[in-house]
Length: 64
Image (tube, rainbow, N blue to C red; front, side, top):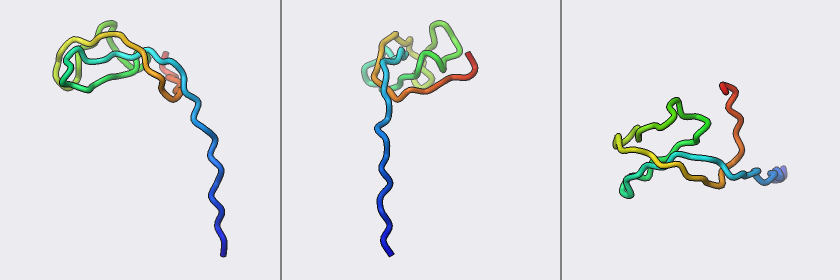
């Protein structure tokens, strides 16, 4: 029996606004659309977060 690999479509990426931890030693980041606060603190180290952007796969947040 022969099983062919399925052809996968490339993932669509878009420029996405994110929050990045201000501490360089911490690599935490989160999408702006999925944060609950206007200016969140890092959930790992509790430092302040800075607005930035990243190329990420497109996601739809149905809550907003």
